[in-house]
Amino acid sequence: MSLVHKFRAVKGVRDITPPDSALWNRVEQAARDVFARYGFGEIRLPIFEHTELFARSIGEETDVVSKEMFTFLDPSPNFDLLIKGCGPDATEAEQQAMREALQHASHSDKLTLRPEATASACRAYIEHGMQTLPGNVKLYYMGPMFRRERPQKGRFRQFYQIGAEVLGQSDAPAIDAELIEMLMTFFNAAGLTGAQLFINSIGDKNCRPQYVETLRATLRKVHDQLGPDSQRRIETNPLRVLDSKIPEEQPIIENLPHIADHLCDACRDHFAKLRSELDLRGVGYEINWRLVRGLDYYMRTTFEIIAPGLGSQNAVCGGGRYDGLVELLGGPPVKGTGFAIGTDRVILSLQEANPNTPVRVVDVFVAWMGAAAYAPAVRVTHRLRQEGIAVELPPEELKFKKSLSLADKLGARYALIIGENEVASGKLTIKRLADGEQAQIAEGALVAYLGSEKS
Ligand code: HAM
Image (cartoon, rainbow, N blue to C red):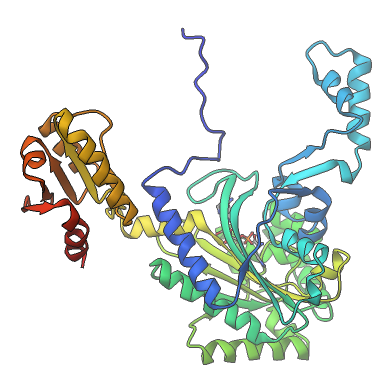
């Protein structure tokens, strides 16, 4: 048996390799282009933060904070104790000292790989005093997030989000509507068809507590007909019962009181205006009264977008309003609204819809033969690349047949043939691989030829 360990990526995380990565880049670029048109600027946020930031923002009772975060201790004066206490030869006393050190580790010693980025964006807003900037602050970000979830199709432990946040003095429903309009424009630009938007209002601190109590009271009456998770949530977070996908619970949930009937006047008005703002912008939506979302910071507007081809993990975007979050984190009383797109799922949905679209990475394959052809091959390759053409130059001489077959396998559009004849005549042979059409072209005219062929 080999003693060499075969390394594999950790469960729930994966590599994104070419040509898939080209599709990722295209989707991310579509977001950059669309978001810029709506006045958003990119913020690059750290991958880890103090655990307390997420616990406070997302909520201690949520699944994300209570079970899914990747948390570690920052090296601290206790670190040596931990290493000794964990070691294979640890004495009972060292183990005990480690247990105590862990117990007493203060929140400030704990760091967490970000499970989402809204909390970080709010932290950065406060840290950089962005409330003094003119108008609403519109930020977008993209990058990996980490949640210890059970991996399955469309659900990873390291996954990627493209998110946007609007922070400022105004809580106008037009901000939510414009954000949603931007999202739908992005999905269109990314080529994702069949995306469906669901919206809801979950009220605010004036009306939601009463609704939650009404819901809890109703749920207590049907306690015995519910599964263990929902039974527990009756006390911890009854709104989450509405999220249940368990088939037997569906008829019971359908008969629960709707939040729409319990909104205060201000929230009802906000929701009505959001709907008319969406109508004004020609954005189609459906109301889903059960859309409560799994993070505690939301109030009023919540929304989700689902896409085809994804099975049960079909939400490609989630978002909503979170007035008060910045204040909760020690900042000024500004309002906030935002979303995050699950990039992995957008890519999956695009691939399901178009399984055969290869992403071309080679325009021209240079098939050079003979030592005298090498220098012109290097020169012409450089020239074409300067002009933005993707060129593959074999580093060693290949037999003609092998060269063409490799060009074909790489998906090249053209083979540029440089052999003895071409060196002698000064004209290069360009061959279109789709149909074998050939032409003799002087090196200087090649760029123009390829350009005219493209259009
Ligand atoms: P979220 O609903 O937790 O919201 O996540 C947003 C999206 O990220 C989901 O709709 C899904 O597409 C994707 N996602 C979440 N978990 C996973 C996973 N384990 N694997 C693959 N994709 C996943 C938020 O994160 C909020 N911060 C959104 C937001 C921004 N709200 C306001 N501003």
